[in-house]
Length: 225
Image 1 (cartoon, rainbow, N blue to C red):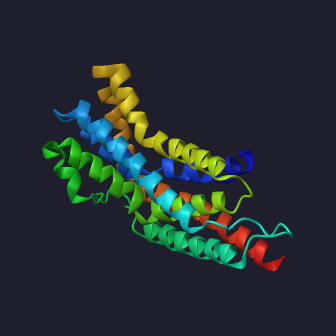
Image 2 (cartoon, rainbow, N blue to C red; image 1 turned 90 degrees about the vertical axis):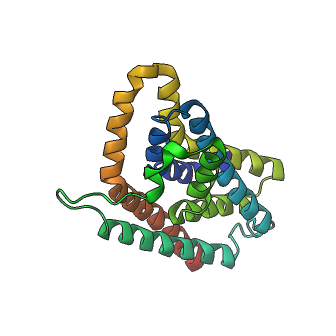
């Protein structure tokens, strides 16, 4: 199981560094339904990660290493494709980053969080984790990395659970601050939201670039050996 967990640590951290769910959580915590919508958003985020990861694990059954210890060619090809797609996401976000005093463009749903119900907040969390291009690619890469290890189904499930927990840390952080600091948390959360809004594109671009380099490097190494 240690091998499987070792494979997903970097992917989990990359998913945790997702600005939009953090911004969304802070906005939710400033609404009258903060105590219900905040946990619902986190639950949806966790469910989305777990669902996509589980599907990939099931589809990738039998992707363990060969007798020579090398991954199947299709597994390396998947790494290469995911790396190229992440590189494209990185370039796109870097080009779209705000410059100077340029206003930051935010999704329309951020202006309507006051009207959210817990069910809608949970659905938003699932969409942000499972359908956001960056997160979707990272979850696929993490689950595929787990699937290729020569470990039992139980160990792979445990590794996926560790990945989900790590990937949820960024979204959970504002919620923890809210319940521990109470009224004193508002100033900290407002500052975090503003910083995330301003640096969302740059954060996403850097994270995607680093993970693209890892995936492409691993794929080239495997395909050339």
